[in-house]
Image (cartoon, rainbow, N blue to C red; front, side, top):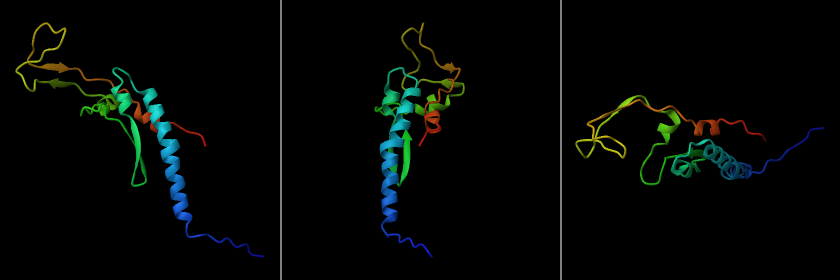
Length: 126
């Protein structure tokens, strides 16, 4: 005796819709929640910039670091090497607490503070 299974042509659309719903409603929010929890907090702008969306069927989880055009999330996630900071609009740099204006700053770099990668690579059940 042979068992026969008929597959309706709509299976592909149904599977795609189910995968999209899972990515949008479960996996994306779970990753964003973990990334926000792992994210270092100074002003909260970096945490607030973490979001997810679907793009051509792919789940995209991203962070910028602020809605005012600043994009520093990668510097936090990956750290920076030692670098020189030079003035852009003026002839010297000055900040509150500095003894006097300076022509350049030899920045020692920053250590990485990963928050996206641990959230993305976290083992999840189900």
